[in-house]
Image (cartoon, rainbow, N blue to C red):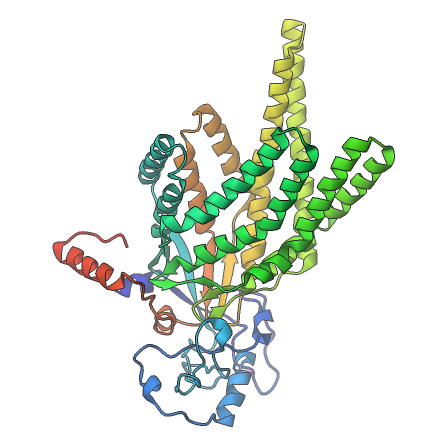
Length: 488
């Protein structure tokens, strides 16, 4: 691929925190886009590029002077004018053998000069008309196949959205075959239908047992979803990965799932026994579970971000528990304000109906309450989503990459409220336009700050060699020769 597009999408800026330390009276550090907290993380070694001379070089003993410079490189000591070294070997936890095990000497990955950081903005170029065609075809096939086309519809939608998103001049892509989604979809449908059938059968105990079984299997579904999705998501034909295990996901999710199951069982006991003490116990358990939700969310995102892998590079999440708690408190306050406003509007409408008709229809009352509840959801859900995106990605990164999210909470809430109103007025036909507008706002609020050039990152990140890579490359060459555009 021509690198001109990558260079045009990258801005090179100079930041103060990475300036070399002075021997006497160093200048005061200023607060800017990149926080210095990542400089304390351990170094990461990158594998040598495929076909490079270092792969054929003999194994040499490490130079202690170079190791010392590498260890001090992120503290401001500049080893070379245009490169910085990596002192640690690339371990097996990153998904590839170490350099020593493969018979290669540990090499250095050149970084940008000290104080220079590249900015890679995300750009989304999708159009509502193009996505509307994909959505209408998916909807028609879903109706004709009674829902069996769902995996294919999911893949088609994701491919359109990914292939119209660019990072540093290269598009994202989604390669998952629809057949791989069938086991997860069948398992999810079986759990949902099993729980609904158990409750519909009239047996409360059977319903609770089915619900407990669904909660126990839920981490397995999350593991399958994360592993498959990240393994088939690529940037510049280089696959991402999620290297967490199923046991680790169970350890990260057992507390909220166990607490939710305990609250559900206490609720069943309170309904059956009908004793004030049981209701008090259920209320106390529910309050404790809700109060512990920020800790549950913090634990989950620390685990998830830590196991996301961009080639040999792992991410970390540095958000604190008080920051997550503050996000929940702000969301709670906003939910209370939205509820009061929605109920106030519903009360005024009810009063108007009473004045005009002199009586109140039960159907009208229920409809107004439902509309008020939907209005609260339309205002609270995007508020929490915007806050969570900024919190998650502003604290994600490592010594070499940082993410920056500047999603405006007010603008995102207004956009989603507008979409909710238009979806109601158009009976759902506005959905493609809502998806494209939401995707554009969320994607273009993200920026990646890197201390490594994009071309260097690609050179040290092997291209995925799938079973049909040669056929795809031949087809692309034929298409380029014919003057057509390739969508791969």
